[in-house]
Image 1 (cartoon, rainbow, N blue to C red):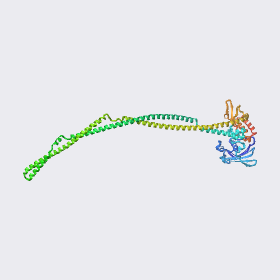
Image 2 (cartoon, rainbow, N blue to C red; image 1 turned 60 degrees about the horizontal axis):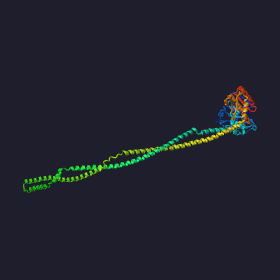
Image 3 (cartoon, rainbow, N blue to C red; image 1 turned 45 degrees about the vertical axis):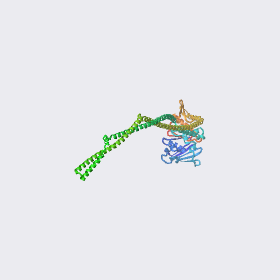
Image 4 (spheres, helix red, strand yellow; image 1 turned 90 degrees about the vertical axis):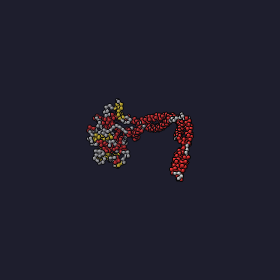
Length: 572
């Protein structure tokens, strides 16, 4: 493929610029800042477009927006095995606003843009491969390769997308492995759960033993309670019988007291009758009343009849009145004598009652003699035994509560152990399932790597022969470099194999340029690209720069090379 000419409408600082190129080596010499890197980015953008800003760490779309405004883009004419074409592109802030047209310069017709993209259609490689091979920006190139490059180098062009998928598959496997490892339960968590289960089982065993001990204590306490209950019952019965006997004694004493009090009352009543009243009971003068009445009436009659003088009659009446008074006196005495007679009857009754009371008292005394040994019942022992029974009941209730607590603890521990078992089983199942997946992924990874290495090993020697031939053109001061099956450059030293990155910048530039030209030869089987060198020799010393010019002049016989620099000392 050869770029013939191009026109830049506006791209970065470049505006309304035209360039023409011929076959072989093309050189552009301009001062710093005129836009040499902008030109190289424009050529890449014409073939591959510009990626979205979010997908390009270099922010090329934003960086190369026209400084002066106007149409963001231009056109480029090129010739290849497919014909002569002009590609016109106009860029916007986002890819959705981009426009592109492809003209067939032979037929002067607009042709349809390839579905895979112009660069892929023309060179058979993607943007990344193009950047890693034919596009060498200043101080920004390495020797790394991708799977598409590897496929081209290995001569597996028709399998390049499959082989490229190997790298993607390996990256995906690595990503999956990383994600699965995050899902893996850490052994520390499993050990922690196992230790917790051991502790729970120990606690459960202790709880079971405690329940057995409490059951034994409950049995002992129940037996003790039964014995105490029987003792308390017997003591209550004895106390009740004793209380009944004592109550009988108290009743007899009460009756005896009542009889004594009754006897005392009878004696007091008997003693209230005087002896004088008893003597007057034998005397009675009822006749005095009659005589007094007769004499009094006779005196009155004599006086009224005037039989005798009123003196005599008065005397007779006086004698009658005297006799009346005396009769009254004697009547009173008689009444008293009658009372005495009544008292005598009462005394008789009293004596009779006193005798009966004395007999009753004697009987009660004789009956009370049988209870002489009976004393007040002592309930202290019964109370003591009752307290023992109460305490035993409290102990049983306490032991019962303790047993319930222990049984609840046992159930809780068993549930927690079952929960721990389930959790542990789930975690182990997760690890088993994840481990199986990891094992499959690891086998797949190892298989793909081995398969890739087996394919690569067949082509390592030719690649190393080509690299060695190119490096011999430069002054490497006895340094030895090889390319491994991953197409990484390594340095062989007395201390072992070192990575490419440990070399000086000058050597790294030489190795990168040689590797890139070798890759261009191997990767682009059908259409060779225009190689763009953007001041790529700034780190070369004078001797190696002279040798680099010879290499470029030799390579330019088969390739179109666009060499851009800003110093006459680096002019070819």
